[in-house]
Length: 129
Image (cartoon, rainbow, N blue to C red; front, side, top):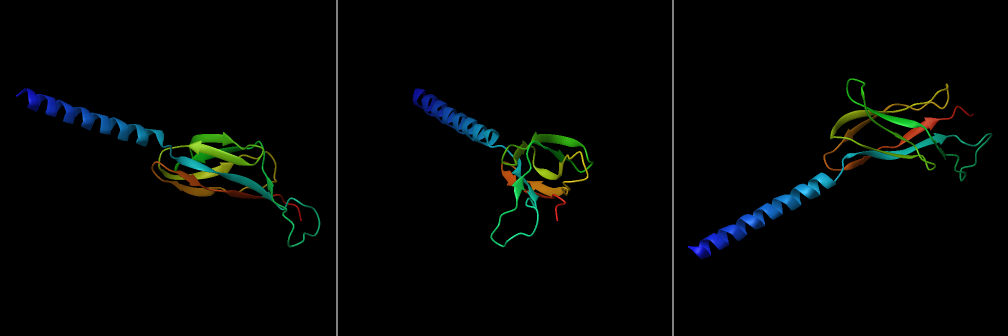
C-alpha cells in the first residue's frame, strides 16, 4: 500500500511539474507585432540604382487598432525606426501618427498569431520628388 502511495504521489508530482512548466513556457512567449517604419525617398534629386534612399522614421508613435478603431497598444519608433507592441492574437491595423501632411504612412492590416511576434513593416512616403 505504501508503494502505491509513493508511486501515485510521484506521478502526481511529475504531472503537476509538467503542467507548470508548460504553462510557464506558454505564458512567457509573447504575441504581438514588431517591425520597422521607413521613409522613402530620403534623398533629394535623381537617385542612382545602387543608392539607398530609405531612412528610418524616428520618434513617431505607432498605434495598434482593433476592428472598431480603438487603440489597444502603442509604441514609439527608435533611432532605427523599429517598434514592438505586445497584443493578443487577432486582426488589427497599424497606424503611424504624423502631425503634418508628410510623411504619408498607410495604415497596415496585420494578423497576430497566438504566442508569436508577427513582423509588419510600414513604408512611408516622404513626398520628396
